[in-house]
Image (cartoon, rainbow, N blue to C red):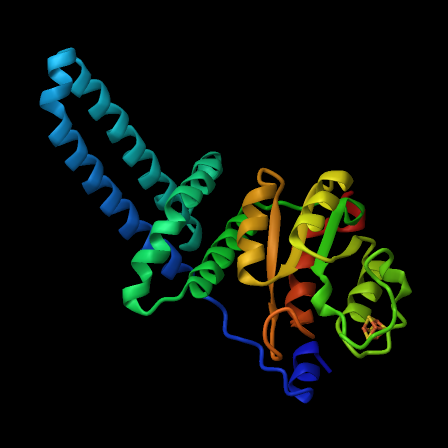
Length: 268
Ligand code: SF4
């Protein structure tokens, strides 16, 4: 029986996959508006600037134009990656910086279209995962850290797993047991964090070569960007009981991601 059918048996609905083009479309719209705004600022400020020095409007206009072109290239890079076409991994840093700057504006712009922040964050994670996989990042299991929030543990479980996940008795009451078993079988490090800050501390302390994080949209979105350039892939948790309480994860998706990231033993 697959993990998906086990979840169906427990009446846990696995949400549909977020659409990557949603995030890219909103970024494009935001970038277009930012370009129009920069042009407006430049147009209004140009006479004043040329009074100071004749060359100033050209310099300021040039800086604005380069910023817009670089951000468009970053978005184009995402489009190429999503379309399975060759893209420039060198521009990935630019892409992440761009996301940091434009994301809050994109959230505001998306609201009138009935697109919520969570949906947009889910779309970012799907795009980021795809770029991760397209870059062909693979690491030995011993250099991979899988980190998950504490809310994945059954709330009534008496066993303390945040210091040592090995304390889990694998009773099947939550997905922690399956993750502990998987970490032993595959050899990756597994850690249960009580919050995003602790998760980041563990990452900085352990210095893995890659991270697979299981969390909600908000934590994944900020976490992936915070640990960059460390490659991180995100798997969304499932919240049938509301946020931060007895959450689940699609173990089939976790396994599929692990198989893509972990180098086979013969290639280590
Ligand atoms: S699987 Fe482990 S963590 Fe989950 S309820 Fe059972 S003993 Fe507790």
